[in-house]
Length: 536
Image (cartoon, rainbow, N blue to C red; front, side, top):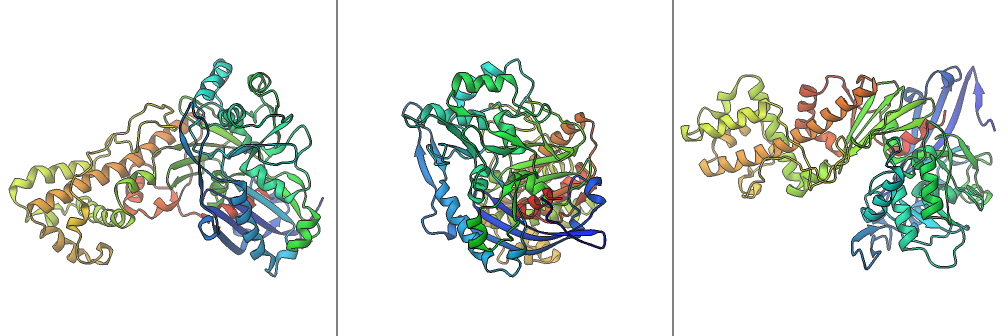
């Protein structure tokens, strides 16, 4: 099906990207002008030829009855997990489509492509009806199932299907603990499959569901051989005999034509087709504008996710790294358990901003050789503490920012322990200046800092050391990750920084100092835009 509108050697498309995440749903409508020759020359669309027409966001919290539920799956394993329901997703999707319905470009939308949270899944019957709860991407209930999978995979090459949070372990857990009796055919639906099924008359037959290769990676699909390896098929035949393996499609391929009812109700073009999508993290990567081998992103949100484009795949269960196939190129990636959740466990957002500004202030004067400017009036008895601060700020130490034991990437070890300075006992707010620190001039900040009494000064140093160790710990995670990725034979080209942590100025300073000077600003941070780049 050719839905291009050709003019002067170019083509133009109107594309709707939809990002279904853990906190809500977003849509982005893009007008894309494509040079026909460049279609074959690059793996992705060129962001400079895109015009983002509309961006819409629907948080789950804005919907009535949208609270997440807590489900106890097993009395023998009484672990509580936060879950979401397809009903919640549907409410958000309908709200989004209702807003799109009234836009002037809706009847020109001929392409829709979606992304959703990787490894969030449920089991359904032939009709697509949910027969189990949803297990979220971060669920860790499937420890016994993960151990069972290891007996099949122990002699297999490294794969993303191993581990307690893999799709395969979750599917096996749901199969053994949640399916009702008298169900003959059981289907594994990732969150993306549920979303795709809403738009199409069929994305499945009675024997299989069609899903993109990226979301299937953690179920055991091997994009190198374009099939599931024998050991994965053995898991299904021996442990889940009534469950069906989804069939894989390359990300960006056409899944099918939209339902006539959706076209009529919303007003999409009568030629509108749905494309196989990808995971939310890959969509976020594509949103940055990354386009060439070596380009990478570090996304500091609640966790720290890192990805890089390479010519060859690289898998290592030991390090928690795996490779996605997108068009003709590979995307290496992994996600650390370290991230913004570590900071926010100890500090409020206001306190993080306070310490970030203060660290930048002190670092600048240390780097400029102006330490006396901020410390010359201190009592000599505090000299050891000042020297300790100098050392901590001027050297990258072996810190590692984790909230609790256990790491996924670049070290895959459920017992791994983080390394940070001791958490201060005294509340940071006891030394807050009367005015917000970001409103203070350098002279005013210096005055505030020098007027702290001995007790307040020690409290301030304690918090600076602790905060600095967390930020350095993030840099160490990145450093170890990119050193690992170099083993694939790909050097770092451009590094795009995304996520809420991108606003942390001190983190950016240390990254440029200890990682690379090729940090770039992202074209966009909207995954709903990023997923549209699959449509070339």
